[in-house]
Amino acid sequence: MQARNWRLMAFGCLALAIGLSGGLLWQSMQGRVVPYVVEVDRFGETRAVAPAIQTYEPDDAQIAWHLGHFIQNIRSVSTDAVLVRQNWLSAYDFATDRAALFLNEYAKANDPFGKIGTRSVSVQVTSVVRASDNSFQVKWTEQVFERGSLASTTRWTGILTIVIRPPNNTDQLRKNPLGVFINAIDWSRELDSAAPTIVSPKEPANDK
Image 1 (cartoon, rainbow, N blue to C red):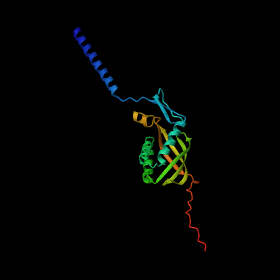
Image 2 (image 1 turned 30 degrees about the vertical axis):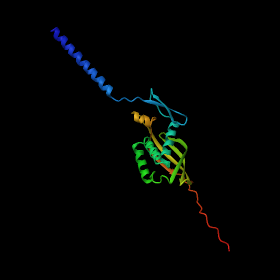
Image 3 (image 1 turned 90 degrees about the vertical axis):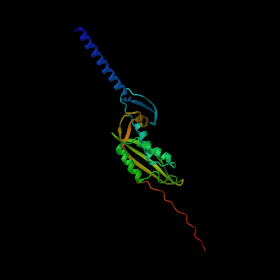
Image 4 (image 1 turned 60 degrees about the horizontal axis):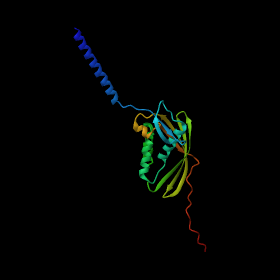
């Protein structure tokens, strides 16, 4: 009887060891995301990344830098098609599904590749200020160049609604380390913006 009890105990210990080993193996195979803190300079640009001890919330300066960069990526048009494509792909990394739909519709109505080589747009962000708990007002100036000559200068104002979603995988950490996502976009040209009047030269009158 005693020998039987010892055998049962041995089998029980073996089963327990197998169960613990299986649990450890399963846990080791699960992806684990470690939160990170991103160090940025005074302009909000990313400088360093390190593991975080607690939940990190980006401040207004950091958010403002990314929102300004987002507007530049979408509204500017380079003469280089490769650069235009890179800018748009980068913008989508900061857009929620809702904002991505807005970008899709905007691109359909204003093909950024439609006039590559003949038309370019330079964007200068002039201010980014908080408008509410989850939205920022962005102001910028656009200069349109046609075949190298300035064709118009306009001023724009936009409201960008954001959500903060900390990255949960290495790909998101690389593309959007602060987890700042644009969720809604609304922009319009300021009313006092107008294209410069172009006066065509006239042939001088032939006095007789």
